[in-house]
Image (tube, rainbow, N blue to C red; front, side, top):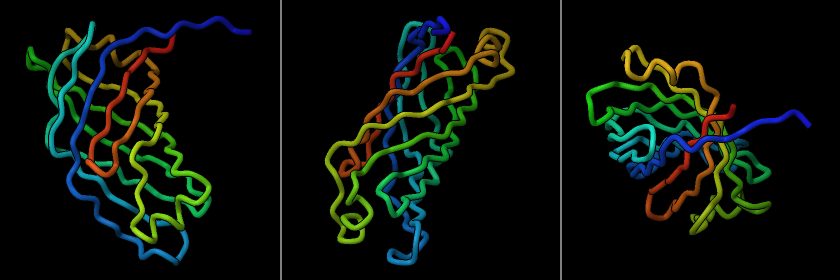
Length: 153
C-alpha cells in the first residue's frame, strides 16, 4: 500500500437556491442546477464565507448516481478569494432516478468529491499545490450541503 495522510483543512456548509431542472425527466440523464445562495467555511486552516456565485451543474444518471460539477468561491475572513472546483458522486439509490421523476427526494445523501482550490493570495498559495477530498452530506429537501475538506498528502 502506498502511504498517505489526510489533513482536515476546513468544513463548509452551503445553502443553495431551489434547483432548476434543465433536462426533462424521462428522456435520459437529468440535468439539475443548484445555484449557491450563501454559506460559511470554518476550520483549522481556513475561515470565511461562500460567495453567492457558482453552482453545481449536477447530472442525475438513470442508475440513480448523480455526477457533480461544482464551481464556487470562498472569501476568507482576511480577504483572500479562493476558487473551488470539484467533481464527485452522490448516490440517490438504485431507484433514485425513478423516485426523482415522482418528486421523491431523499432526506439525506452521502457525497464524495475531489476539489481543487486556487488562489493568487500570498497567504493561501499553498492551497494551489493540494489535491483535496470532500466527505459530505446533502440535505436535499432543505437545499443544504455540508463538507469536510481534507488535503490528501
